[in-house]
Structures are given as C-alpha cells and as structure tokens.
Amino acid sequence: MKIHSVTLVLLIFAASVFAENIAIKPAGTGSADDPFLINKIEHLVWMGENITNVSTKNFRLTSDINAAETKFWNDGRGFLPIGYMHENKKAYASYPFRGCFDGGGHIISNLFINRKEQGAALFARIGTPLQNFDFSTNVLENLARRSKDFATVKDLALVNCDFFGKDLAAGLSCNIDFAMISRVYISGKLKSEKTAAGFSLTCNNSCLEECETDIEFRNRECSAFGCFTSSQNTVLKNYLSLGSFQYSMDDPTDSRIDTGYSARTIRKTGKSYAYYSIILVGGGNYYLYNCLVLNSILTDRRKDKVITFSDSATVHNSFYSAENIRRTLNDNNKVGISNEKLRKKETYKNWDFDTVWEIEDGKSFPKLRKLEKMLKRL
Image (cartoon, rainbow, N blue to C red):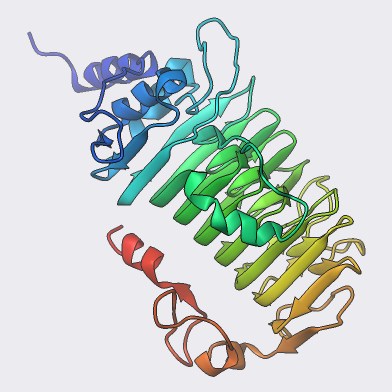
C-alpha cells in the first residue's frame, strides 16, 4: 500500500519533533597522545553526559559536523550545553570543561539550543581557577607563562548557531576563567531575555588570540555585546568583532586589548540598554594597542556612544573610521581616519601581515588569515 507523499512528510516531521539525542562514545582514551576523536553530534552529546569524568581530557574534531537535527531534539529544546547536567531531573548544575578541545580546523554548523530555564552556549563553563596564581604583579606575563595549564579551545568554527537562553546566551561559553582560546570563529543568532555576548558573558584570567565573532543579536530589551559583557585580567589579541564589542572590569585589574577591530552598524531596537562599540569601564588599568573601530551607530539617544574609556585607560596607535562614526566620547589618543586609508596596509603599524592578518591592499579591511582559510570551505 502506498502512503500519500504529504502523509509521509507529516510522519517524518512528527518523528523529528519527538527525536531524542543519542550519546555515542568516540574513539580514543582522552590522553594527549590519544584524544577522543569527535566526528558526529552524538559524540558531543556523550561528552556532555560524561563531563564529570572527562572534563580534563583531550578531544579532537576530525570532520565537519552539521548539527541541524538538534532543532528537533528534546521537545524543541535542542542541544544541552556541554557542562549542564541532570537534564531529566531539571537540576541544571554546571560543570566546567578544563581539558583541551582541538577543532582541527573543522566546522560545527547549525547547532540549535533553546533553553528557557538556563543559559545557552556550546559550553556551560570553560576553565577553573588555578591554585597559587600570583595576581600581585605582572598579571599579563603570569597569564602567558602559565597558559599551558589552562583549559584550551582552538581551531574551531561554530557557524550559523541559533541559541536562546533565558538569562544569558553566548556563542562559546557562559563563563570563561583561566582558559586559552585560539583561532575560534563564531557566527549565528543569539537571543536572551537579559544579556547576550558573542564569545562569553564573563571572561576572566584568560588569553584569546585570533578570534572572530559575526553575531546577529535578536534581543529587544536587553544588552548585547560582540565579545564579552565583562572581563578581568584578560588578554584579547588579534580579534575581529563583527558587531558591538564591550570590555569592562569592575575591580582594579591589568588587562590588554591588542590589535584588532570591531565593525558593522549598530541599530537600536526596543528598550535595550545603551550600546557601545568599545567600552572600558571600572577602576582597573586597561591597555588598548593597535585597535580600530569601524562601527557606526543608529540611535537618537545621546547616552549611546561608539567609543568610551575611563581615565585609567592607556591607548596607543588606535583609531576609528571618521566616516562611519559621528559621535564619540573622550577622543584623546584616538584618531579618525578615512575609510580609503583604512583599506591600505600601510595604515596598520605593528600588525602582523605575515602570519596573522591579510589585506587586499586598497580594496578591503584586514582579515584573520587562518580563520579565512578555514571558512573558505563553507
């Protein structure tokens, strides 16, 4: 007996709606020499379900993963962020990932998370405080020296993610602390009832290098930031934020933003908080080197500023698009430059165009070389 094609489609759809995620253990032992090899979404489910036992282990992505099916998992709630536990008992404790996740230059695409009872991100938490870490002097040097002891995520592209979290949503993690994040690209849509950020809500005591976000924020009445909402004792080097970017600290700290830029017009909607492109606030010591702001901002509210720094910020060789940006605050040490000049390699002093950045001289703005190579396969 033949089944009508429409009926068949409905049956397939119904089966998808009630689909459950399945955990499959990957090959490997999780050691540095024999990492767990991830090549399907079910391997990530296993990682999440066993996080208390494998949080310090090594993982390597060995192929691209299309996670579109997660939209139909768990009665429409999608993928459970790695580190959230007790899904069925509703006890959403978060457990940090403290090992190494090597993306191998591969892509996880179309991952779906819809969590009305908790935060949404690929990882609930990355890293935990190190014992006997010296915060008294030379914090940035101490971070670099001990980075081998940090949790690590590297060489990974998270493309076209669609995340909703009740109080917060982030692309990579809800919280990062003592972690090394290198060559990570995140794109897609984030939505939350309170706060959303491209990489993480908070990022403390960490180093991020050659990272890029390209996020569409679907928030109407909350704050949204391209990288973080707040951070302390953190180095952000060679970054590209396609969206608003905020970097703030509440306590006296020593942090540095070194080489990179934020871009794309910021459009205000709803009753959201003030938007900024780069904002450094708090009582700490901030260092801003070789940075560019391309954002323009479309809003009538006078308190919305594209650039703002506290008096304690140290700014060197940083500038903004004089054509895109009409209103700034505290213009000391910041220079407005035409977009024509910003498309020329000679404008970017001290930028590494041999191994990190690339530019089509006279035609484009700088791009991160290794991430561009990774994304050309899309």
